Amino acid sequence: MNTKLILLLACVAGAAFTVDFGFPEEEDVLVLGDKNLKEALDKFEFILVEFYAPWCGHCKKLAPEYSAAAKELKALANPIPLAKVDATENSEVAKQYEVQGYPTIKFFIKGQPIEFNGGRTSADIVNWIKKKTGPPSTHLSSNEQLEEQKKANKVLAAFFGSESSSEFEAFKQAALSLDAVAFVHLSSGSNTFTVFTQHNNGAAEFSGAFSKDAILAHIAKHRFPIVMDFEGDEAIERVFGAEKAAIVYFSESETSFNPVFKAVAESDAGKTPELLFFTSKVTSGLGQRLADYIGVSASSAPALWIIHPANRDLSKFQHKGDLTADAVSKFIAGFRSGSLEKIYKSEDIPATNDEPVKVVVGKNFDSIVKNSGKYVLLEFYAPWCGHCKSLAPIYEDLAKKHAGNDKLVIAKIDATANEIPGISVQGFPTIKWFVPGKTEPTDYSGERTLEGFNAFLKEQLGEDFAEPITDL
Image: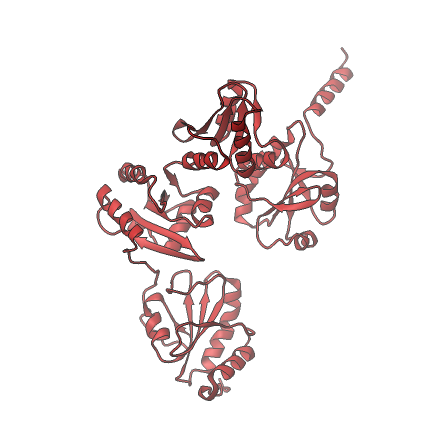
């Protein structure tokens, strides 16, 4: 066989295993934008599109998982493309699809978008797309294929039996409603269903009457370890997405207390209201961000807290004392009975507070704001917020010009380090107006200019308004 023929056959063989979608690619992900996104949406029946920003940390973390999913979906008998759009460089399509944050991921079916609400690992992405584009459960022909699926998925729901049975129909309906878990079925068996998990090599066989809800409940019961690490999107979704209470053991490293914590978790299973159990590293990853948000420092570890996000608020309760099984159980019982005292973050009261803009912290909020008998304009800010930094000189100038009015206080509070009971701040800066004798503040919604603030103060203060100092 001559050399040219060998090269030709090699090219043909290579082409058989390579899909060319007809668009620029990076690591198996299509690179799209203002000029070619519509062309791709018209061409492909199914396509997943990530709108990202190059500087976004979440986007960078997602990138290798997204590429791995793209490679796997590209190798299917009916390949499905994954694409990315730099939303900072392609403002037309970013505006068209209402991209407000990064990453924003949308799945297009015949050009029509739906929100991607799956997990952020390659397996999660692949499972989610397979559910949207194919049968809800994948048919396997051998136990060898089953073992491969068990290795590929942290959680696998498997049915063994007849596809024409009522039990399989219930299994299929459950599969249709749960995108985050892979569902498979084998023809062998007597209509049974098992949840396989990679934690502890678990295998939990279902027993009882088959129904969609019963199957989903069985999966939910066994899907997660009794004690999870607070890392990844699953942890965030379980606690903050579902607004479930969680007890978190913060440590700098693994300690001898963890077995005690796990034993308490096992004994607590099935009690209501449900309490999720997590361990978390104070010094790294998502655990560090949670610790910073709550107010847990490395020097205070090990530490035990219960958190309960609900109604756009986060209630926090701190365990004090020995970390024994009995003490932890009593701490949990106190939470369920409502007898625990909520903890609110606060910085220390500043040693001096004589600048034009007064500094409010959690510990002096009552004395400066609530019980001062004065009108208070209070800015809730974040140190890293660009809008807050832009407002700072204007706000400072406002305070200087009204320094002579002893009935008015212009103040600020770092809302990332201090919490005020009953006040929830959703964005920065948030500015609230407090009136003596009234329990609830109102939001300032005027222009954030010196003129806008002055007009607001004149309207609100009435006869208590004093003309601002002009010769500064």
